[in-house]
Length: 489
Image 1 (cartoon, rainbow, N blue to C red):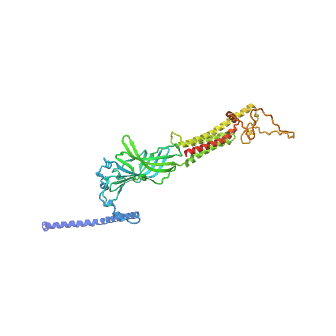
Image 2: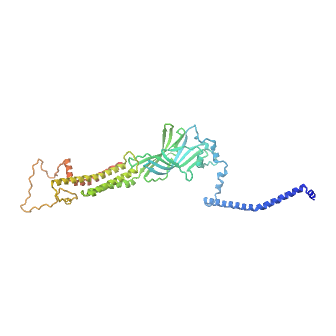
Image 3: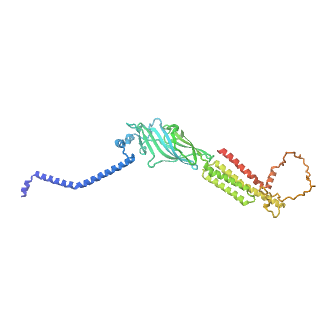
């Protein structure tokens, strides 16, 4: 029976059965995979739909509620197949060499916009400035074909692959290129090979200041630019637009007026490497005086005037006059120390030093004046005690005269009354014989005294020292102020 069945199925029939079995197996696999494919397709469509909505909202938000399809069409990063490095042929040239190597010097134009002067330090003799430094030159190696003759702008990533001028700041202490949020560097390349290279820099540089007239001084500082490696045979620095190459924003400083900003240029020579082009950014600063008037000059004047109060205090009030004198001396010492601490240690005398030390001398002399008054008063009283002119029960308050000073040699007791009788006649005592002619009418009697006699007279009348000091000290200090302000202002 088996053999009969095998004979009935020929080889063609066997192949048909096998094909039918494979077909049925494929249908079963498709029936099992169909729901999975439908689920995956729906998820992909939802993701694309959400992405389109997100991009649409952002684009509307960015372009004022509408989608700029023209911008999408003109996006060269999608339409161009050539990379920027290939377009500029960076790999075809050696950018370690300057443009036109072996020929004439390459001209590099500079223009600067000063954003701010951040600080000026008298102690460190430096200033800090933030500026935009722009370079202009031509490099034919970066020329590229362009149908619309438009430039291409790049950031710091391309700058590191091409040649740029190595300009540095002479006498710079520290400097840096701003890097928030990216490095503040711009490179703009034109089709003909012209290049604009701009950086935003903060630099701290030395400024040699002269404080001989401080705080009535004017300082002239400069920021100097120069190529480090290329001398004048390889690179020529120049101001791009002449005097208009230096522009400034509105700058306000706390201690200075900015009187002038101007550019200049020159040459610098180094014995080992030769001559270099150098550009200067010069600015003139004039100091505000009002701050120092409030902090230094007015307090000093008041201390000097306060020391004069002792001339009106009783010369026997030793605690009052000594305390006043010592207080003013110590206050002047504090003012001088405070001003010196905020200034550099220079080897010459400043204008403020002259004023402070002259005022300190006036205060010191007022203390010395009272020491002299007290000493002469004591000597005078000792002499009178030795001569017996003063009673044992001497009271200093009884010697007070009407002008507010003590006159120990004046007796203020009442004069005895003379009898008023008709026979009383006015008699003139006989005049001593003298060779001097009698004075005529209209002349004043004047007795000449030598300097020694005047000094002895003042020593014997010590109250006169205070009287003279009340006039001499203010007049001398006023004269000193007139001379000082005429010279330094």
